[in-house]
Image (tube, helix red, strand yellow):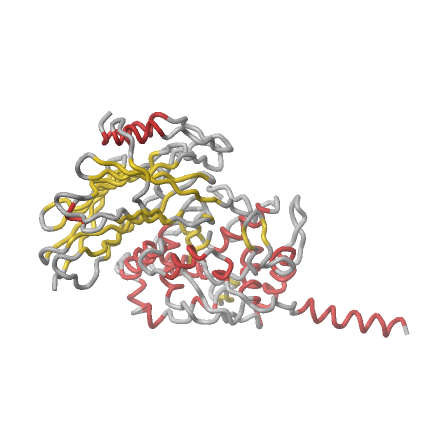
Length: 147
Length: 253
Length: 105
């Protein structure tokens, strides 16, 4: 499976309707889609995520991969996977030596307390993987999104 | 002797009922949000409300039937400064107390604009843009004269138990502020951050929408949008939060 | 589609600078239901890219796990003064673009 199919695979693979208590999915297929089966090296990725996310609809995330970001040695992509989300493939960010810094910030959705996984692809067909737990608090007064 | 005792009890109670005590110390809405939400609110670029403020700024100058907000009101930073801090207020032309959103909608419609439905992007955008011009200014509504009756209605509603959970606003926001409910701190219920981007809604909304959600939270019927009850409650809350600086356009969980 | 873009007022040649962008989009997951119980159809921004100095310097493929009104900060090495543009498209073919001028000191 080519790397660019990682998100498409994610969208199709998981159930269309979420269970009330989201189950934790096996993320190995997602990681393998990125690495083409190779085992990524553990560590070497900084994941900045709140310990407790106040609301799962919008959780600030910053991923930093230390790298010289030169022609010979740079990050080519950062992939974010959320094991408890109905579609675990969250996003893929494509970088290169023109980026200067392998760092991306965004806001993600988290369907419950879980471990967030980040896989970094580097030049020379190398891969790194890092996981970080995050607790997700639920809203007090249950307010249906349409209300 | 008994009548004297009744008087001693009744007078302080009447006084308290007339102008009920406020929480002490008074704490703004953002103080009950997480550090991340506060940071988002403070960041004029990353605050999602900025998207609606941009839209509001554009609508302010956009011509409709040859007229525009700017045509009468000029530069909003000047003409709208302090306006949001005085709402809700009694509007002589409309003959009733209105909140800022209602006033904006009425003005827009009467000046060549379309009818702006509650919670519509355009209405929220214009309201947020106007509210922004009073950011940091203290809430200062008037409850004198024709607004008095509305304020009393709002006060009475604030203390009325409703819903299957049989709770009144005071049950949480006076008796239990600062305590935790389902992993979240209960605020004092001040209306200083509205319209706000609520993470739960993933879009902006008005104070009316938030109050309706509160009613739903205690399993009570939600008052319809623009109902006199909601506006009365808004006026009471603004009076109760008087002196607190406006945070609009805010971010809330 | 409305968006906002922010780059520093001046950037140092050869050094990376932060690009901040926010797009107004509900990022509808397709899992939500309206008040009548009907599912709200999926509608997300799925592609976003940045061009500067005549080349693509950032590209993102997004899923429904990105929060509504998607917000990103990423870095680009400053080369020449000139336009920097961010474009995006959603799964319905709607597109948007914002641009800014990069001033290299």
